[in-house]
Length: 347
Length: 245
Ligand code: HEM
Ligand code: FES
Image 1 (tube, rainbow over the protein chains, first blue to last red):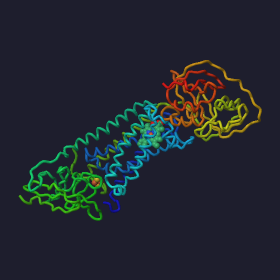
Image 2 (image 1 turned 90 degrees about the vertical axis):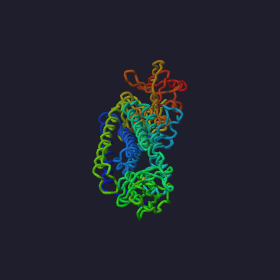
Image 3 (image 1 turned 30 degrees about the vertical axis):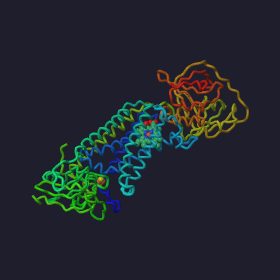
Image 4 (image 1 turned 135 degrees about the vertical axis):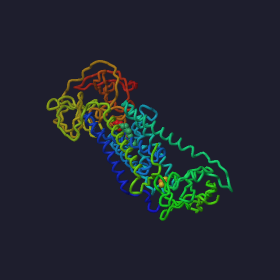
């Protein structure tokens, strides 16, 4: 899907998502600023804006971090994963409003450059209660910027998938920095029980969700042990695989997706070339294996994306003997044709 | 989780399968409700801010006698806002460079008011001398020696420019302001929550700005002599004797 980087196409669904994000942002900011101004008429508008956008950005980050593990636990969350990029960019923009307003309000119009004031104005880096928490927010904002700026598939292709993936794993670093930004910042002065509760509860939710999702994943990782015929490993029974679907089996350390396509069986590497999505949880749609995450497609027998796309994944040779599927543990080079095995072939 | 496992979502197809679409709609609604609850709770439960206001963008004219030391002060004898007004400049700066050479003289100042229920201040935009005659003002009145516990804040932000104008969120800003010449003041809160303000001077009665930078926005205890000048209280003590608590 690299041709034209058109993996994520615009359609009615996508527009509805974007409108929902916008409505959510307006709802949150409107409620926070409106209620804040009504109940605390002595507050300045700047403070309400800083607080509304800061807390909103952190809340959005929680949603963004939850979508991955939720989609692994329940596939019905996959649409949120598919549409996560715009939520990420919107979150960055909200964080930017918060950071920019804070920077102007607290660090501009002084005797040094605002950035110098932000990083060095309060030099008590060795203290906990006096720690310059703004620096933590600043670094986090930098990470969020990098991620928003490279979120397009153009960058995924140009940075190479491992670099891109590593870059985007930094979101967890940003999240930790932000938890500290709040704990060492506002919470040092304002012991707001709701804010403390949300911060601790949010952190607990994110950690638990990731642990549970990771735990569920584990069993599939166990190496598969079965009979061997001519160097081919027994993988599963044909009857275990529903039509147009796959079973994921771990063979010589790699996950293999074994698909049933009508009357034949084909096996490919389980990892999607886009972002390592689990192809074995996908379907065969219009004759192509379709990734459950963002819909990249591959032909079952060659592992190649249909033209004009150029992605390729390794294939595996398969045989069916007496209704049982056997897989050659040696993968073929990406894109190399492997003859599909007829399910009523040899017996 | 029981749901129709046959449905498969492909993002670029025009419509999502019905079961998945319904689930996503429910989830989004839940997230929006949660967001509204968080927004409402966080907005409503912010601690009250200290009183104070800043007439940003509104210029008024004041006439009175200017005192340069220890912190520039304008003593206004009549008009709408009589009494002592501390003077500061635009941004995070004190007014020394604007008031230099006018000690004891009558001046007309144009600027914006900053005030709370205790103190008055002017952000000076223009200063015009009104004749050279020096005027003498009654000297300070000694009120005795006391210990106070409070927080050093910059008087400009604290009296009304910023909410909150104190505490951790405001610490870096207060450091900038006080280094820039804004008078440092000890904010003392009584047990009943009443606020009073003591402007900090050293034993010789001079400004202490550069010597308190490390103690800003932290709880401190200061033991010193209290003096009243005009409507303003000063606390005279060697900054080296301030105790961080
Ligand atoms: C240049 C970067 C940043 C600066 C200078 C900055 C500065 C500040 C300041 C001064 C406060 C205290 C404000 C107050 O309540 O009086 C604050 C609080 C907060 N910040 Fe940041 N921040 C930055 C980045 C971020 C980012 C990237 C996020 C989240 C995505 C964030 C989230 C928050 C939250 C949730 C609070 C607590 C609520 C509040 O008090 O506003 N900040 N930040
Ligand atoms: S389509 Fe993105 S991971 Fe497969």
